[in-house]
Length: 315
Image (cartoon, rainbow, N blue to C red; front, side):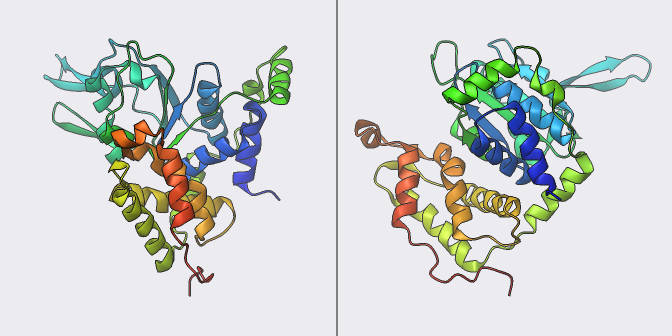
């Protein structure tokens, strides 16, 4: 019998062709209770990916197309006065859902972007002094177009730090593109995507993933990687404690997908760049030498020695 995680990946791979690695990483983020930033040009399947995950996992999902005139109230909701009760009644915003697709999040104002901060960190929103708890699980899958800066607002570092991972789907290879065009000639593969699990089962999987064991030597390894990023002469802002915690959560989820109940150094290496590259702010010296945060994370993995012994299970 295939594991339920394998069934989930199989269903989504039927819809998004040739992107097995990226699909797996999105599932890692979901199991780690994290949010995903997809940085890609239009037409690469970002919206389809979100819809496929929502359908396969049995989640309620909503989509918001961010524009320059999108207001915070469009996202988190607002209060209206009810004559009968004589009090303010909360009108739900798009954020009251399990999976929120925030399309082209960099095309709206900083004020609207910041409306997501509380929700992404604390799974709640506050409107007119009243706190409203979001459904569980709550996942933001945001997209931004890196090509063309007209009418866009760069995400501040504080908000980038709320995303567990940043990914790029990229264009499909020739074989996958031929299959994509052929499959969509008569029908939409999303219509045939099967619901594999439900909310309660997914929450159980998330709980199991977070119980995966991490040895002290692995914690030390992650700490050294973070410290080395902060000491790098090209770096203005290195990996924060929140970033180090995010690496551990993602590594647990990666181990869970591999069927292990303990983390090994390879789990850290697998998730490190996707979790940390968008959290690092480089200085002008790095830009002068065309040195990117992705290259920095790869160099850190090469230079920082992984734990010497191989006993990472629960003793």
